[in-house]
Image (cartoon, rainbow over all chains, first blue to last red; front, side, top):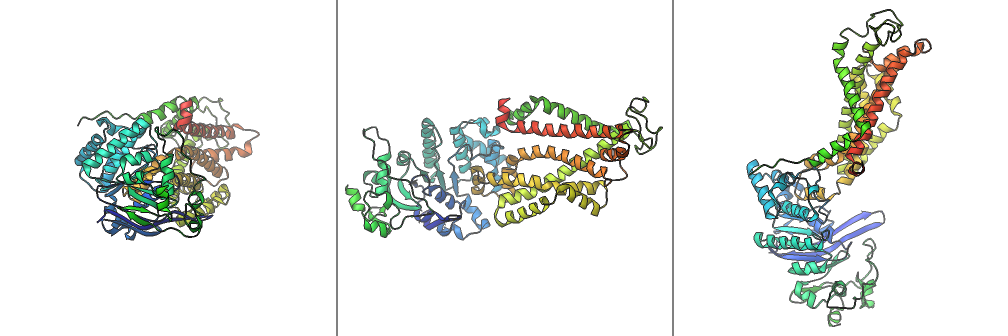
Amino acid sequence: MSLLELRGLAVHYATARGTLHAVDGVDLDIARGETVGLVGESGCGKSTLGKALLGLAPVTAGAVRFDGVDLTALGARARAPFRRRMQMIFQDPFGSLNPRHTIGAILDAPLKVHGLGDRAARRARVAALIAQVGLPPDAVARYPHEFSGGQRQRIGIARALALEPDLIVCDEPVSALDLSIQAQILNLLVDLKRDLGLAYLFISHDLGVVRYFADRVLVMYLGRIVESAPAATLWRRPMHPYTRALIAAVPDPARRRQAAPLAGDLPSPQDVPTGCRFHPRCPFATELCRTTEPPPRTLDDGHDVACHHAETVAGA
Amino acid sequence: MTTVPAPRPRRWRVLRAFLRNPAGVVSLSFLILVAALALGAPHLYPDDPMEMVARPFLWPGQNPAFPLGTDSLGRDVAAGLVWGTRVSLLVGFSAMILGVTLGLAIGAVAGYFGGRVDAALVKLIEIFQTPPSFVLLIVLVAIAQPAIPTVIGAIALVTWPTIARIVRSEFRSLREKDFVMAARGLGYGHARIILSEILPNALPPVIVTASVLVATAILMESALSFLGLGDPNLVSWGSMIGGGRELLRTAWYLSAIPGFAIVLTVLALNLLGDALNDALNPRVAAER
């Protein structure tokens, strides 16, 4: 059984200009210890998806099953034990830490709230967490603004680890950091995964990072998953035209000529195109794409794609 | 584990920024002096300031025993001024504390929970803000007894909406921050998120407004006493001005002296508010 199963997850917001389909029917499985990458443009709903998993965004429809239990059916009190098992690392290391609390207080509070240990035990646990993410011991008494972006992200990681979760949602955890720092943080995440057997949902718009990091990659477009495959397979043989465009857009020193950029902008999630959501920007679009939404289909060994012309795309 | 001395650069930064502002330091010193006078009143003037102690209409400086002169009933103006300080500061600070507490509670709940709770509380705020506040104040005091506690309560009741609006807007923007998301994701209860996560970040504008609110409350109390709606058994700055009103042409000092006391105190509180605003705002503080 998967650790986490999403079935038909939808997050819709009522706005003045109509319903906003941030996440619109997503199926997703994450096994224990697996790293799943979720890629897509800004605004495609990937962050909302991550927040919905943790109950931080309102789920309109569908199920979030954690260890077989549907969290969307639970009240706040019944959900509490599951909060410990699923945590989040945020994109902005400057906004995700309360500027008024010391690092010690930031790491102690989750332990206190969940009643884990007495004062001495909690203090020892905080010190262990700080060491685990590679911060100096005197960080305990200091405030977030005294740290650099990379160090702050380490604090965010320590906070996510405090409750010993099984799954961590990493929402663009390195995109706000310098390139040299990105590698350090990614290595830390890899080490933690190895040591603690964590599963990650790694949300990013940076395919280079995801490729390095993920076992399996999901490509999200306008609230839906359009392709999902093991990382290596996806790179070798992308079958959705959107995935192809994303991969082609990754800067590659071996390739001199710049790849043709994706035409047009992401359509508004308040006004989703008919048929295939991608057809207005798709070089392979036909009349069929304009009228009929392609259902996701499994092509070979765990390679799912939602495109009428996947075979043509893969061969092109 | 070795304990490292906890550096508190943030707190020191605010203090340093405040000390660099001369207007703020002078205001604070003046207010401390005024507070000392208020506390020392029973020692400075142990007798009832309402009692007749000398010939009426002694001008300031005429008799060294009564440096600020006497009023139409032969009461010592200096004694009245010092005892009046007690009333003004008591009313000013009590009304502020009450108003800030009420405003914080209602503003925090409205801003944090949003939705229908917010809509209902905003309506409540608007009900209190619609009538002119001084008219509402007079009505409230006229209904209740003109005593210090009712004056304090009435002033708090007309000033809390200001605080509530500020707190509400701070909470509305802060609750969307990632650190609040993180707190929710960690399973913190609403009370902890409101009190420990959001409130400390929402306080700076409240502190600034609170200092101005003390000034407003002092002015309101003076205005009520001037109109004779204050506590008749206590001397206050407002009642002294009111008492001297009819003698303005012959003994103008009777109104001018307590008036001057009000002006200085209110000015000091406003300057203190400005200085706090600058000190608590990191961008402005850095430019100094």
